[in-house]
Image (tube, rainbow, N blue to C red; front, side, top):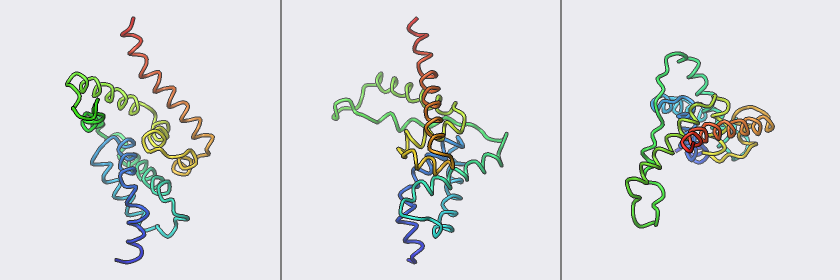
Length: 179
């Protein structure tokens, strides 16, 4: 195994899941997200010598982000929007650690997860990307700024707007049910 391959495995492979997650949220299609991730991974491998430092996550996610927007520009008007697969969320958080949640709890959890996913998908792309990078990928503001190519202040502003919109979207139906 040559040095480039070892460096790629050490620096980039740990972030493939994060790259796929970002791509999936941005392009709304599993197959397209896989294609974008593969393209971004090849670019990262090709340009790995351009990485400064050891923190490859923001650098790689920036490549994924750019590949997503390139894909979206090429596919404009041709995308089929698919729902986020929240079946994996069903098995999360056993109530007492020993028994699976009852069917009513699973249904409620799946409905809530679906509402959150739909609300995130409804955000404009610039707000969706910062909320995904911060809340789902747990990147620091400076890293998000690097990924998105924007100042940290813009990251904070977009996050604030994204959170406010999500709150409005998620609370509105609840308030109507209570009336």
